[in-house]
Image (cartoon, rainbow, N blue to C red; front, side):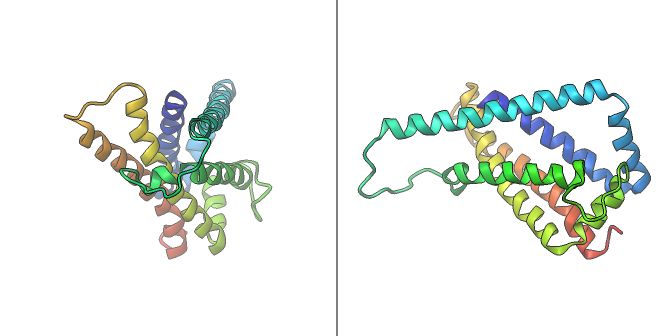
Length: 201
C-alpha cells in the first residue's frame, strides 16, 4: 500500500507541475504535451506502471479493510474516534471517489469522449473549454479536495508503513504530509478557478 502510494503520489506531483504550465500560455502547454507523446514507449511504460500501481493499491486497500473487519467481527456498542482525523476515517470513501474522478478525467481530457469540443493535441484549448462549464469545474474542485484528504492521511501513514517513524520527528512528518497535500490541492484547484474567473482564457 505504501510503496504504490509513493508511486502514485510522485505521479500526481509531476502531473500537477506539467498542468501548471497552462499559466505560461497555450504554446508551452501544448508543446509539453507533444513532448510527452514523442516517446510512445516511455509513455506507455509509465502508463503500465501507473495502472499496476492503481490495481495493487486498490487490492491492498480491500485486503486491509477485510482484515480490519475480521479482527473485530462484533461492532462497538459505542465508538469514539480518539486520535483519528477526518481524513483517516473517510479513506474508504475518498479512495473510490478519487478513482471515479480519474476515470472521468481520462475520458474528459485524454480520450475526449466526455468533452463537448475535444480537439486532439490542443491541450490548452481543451482545458479552458472544459473548465468553462461550471458543473465540470466544480466537480474537479470537489475531487481535488477529496484527493487532498486522501493524500494527507496516505502520506502520513506511508511514513509509518515504511518505518520512518519516531516521536522526535513525527510532528514534522505530519506537517510535511499536510504541506504536500495542500500544495497539490491548491495547484490543481487554481486551474479551474482561474478559468472560471477569466484569468486564463
